[in-house]
Amino acid sequence: MQHIGRQEWLIPDMYYPELTASKNYVSHECICVLNTGDADADIFITLYFENSEPISLRPVICAARRTHHIRMDKQTDVNGDPVPKGVPYAAYVASSVPIVVQYSRVDTTDGPASFMTTIAYTK
Amino acid sequence: MQHIGRQEWLIPDMYYPELTASKNYVSHECICVLNTGDADADIFITLYFENSEPISLRPVICAARRTHHIRMDKQTDVNGDPVPKGVPYAAYVASSVPIVVQYSRVDTTDGPASFMTTIAYTK
Amino acid sequence: MQHIGRQEWLIPDMYYPELTASKNYVSHECICVLNTGDADADIFITLYFENSEPISLRPVICAARRTHHIRMDKQTDVNGDPVPKGVPYAAYVASSVPIVVQYSRVDTTDGPASFMTTIAYTK
Amino acid sequence: MQHIGRQEWLIPDMYYPELTASKNYVSHECICVLNTGDADADIFITLYFENSEPISLRPVICAARRTHHIRMDKQTDVNGDPVPKGVPYAAYVASSVPIVVQYSRVDTTDGPASFMTTIAYTK
Image (cartoon, rainbow over all chains, first blue to last red; front, top):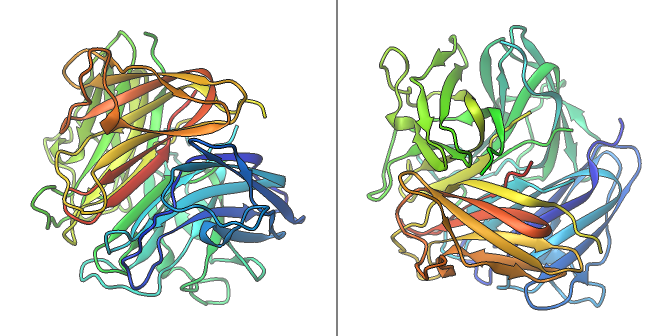
């Protein structure tokens, strides 16, 4: 099937909670990618902060005809450092081929998991 | 009334929770379709996974001038198998006529139901 | 200021929960309208169901330079009947002037309120 | 990098809960801005209500190559008054350069935090 979507996506509201109080879920965020096409997608994520320069994550791949739910708590930047907890941030997602991106967060700070989601912004 | 919407929709973040701890709700997902037009919509859903080839669900119908909240826990693929639990997946939705699609999830893994929703992506 | 937005909006996933177990919130839905312009908006909402013909609600107004969070539990159809509880439905929203529409639900079936929201679909 | 996004964004469903019953989160709302470009964004937020004229908040800045998660509970209008609690409202966001806007709410009225989010509407 053809590639559907766009090559640039933006997510203004990201936050990696410091606490986890659920037995079933760890507080986490996902940048969920769907690649309907026949070529692998090389995905480059840049994180933006409130008081410091942007940083680049290590590239990830969403293979042809696959989804990749990119767990932010498992990513590292180009220096090997993890995504910081407890600070507001945002993301710019660039892909080598058209993809579709949805952002979701699971917050278990207070115990029971609470979910939020939105299709990311694209031009 | 005329058909409003599009014939192709995508949902990158789908997940069918393995656990249910609410008395009132079963953890479930819905692909909610609205067909405002005067012809029935034949709906073809393809599921994408992280580590295996896409699969096709048995077609469903959203009749003319109706909504259909397609419960994913009640669907089967063309081989009769249900949607797998506990694995990240995504969906491509194709319709014979223009429709509008919204995706919602109810997660009761931790007890009280938590909801998330978004209009799906369309070109 | 000028009117911003569109005159037609669609919401595929609506549901009015039958139960309420929170002391602070009644389970409810809102079709939230923003009218930035200098003319009042006459708003016509049509509800779609899974197994019966659409029904029209009594028209509502969102005045010039105002928002109107239209509580679905306070609306009636043209016969004076309320929105039915416990059944999946959807909505088509038409306005006499351009507006912006966001749909939100508060579900307190299990006790603590859970929220979901999305900008509605427009062409 | 270039500026990505739009200069006008709208959020029909805003509400600042009166109660907070979580130890970890205060009930709050955020208008989250991402400014990918090399010029600072001057951001002008107008609030709309159900029964009174719109009011303007004191301008805020989202610096070049930064995100700004604008906490509504920390903003004041041009007279120095805070955002009112317990009343439905909406927002029009104007920026001096293209930005991307996402709206999120954390409600802890009933105890455990519940989250909702959506990319705001833009033309």
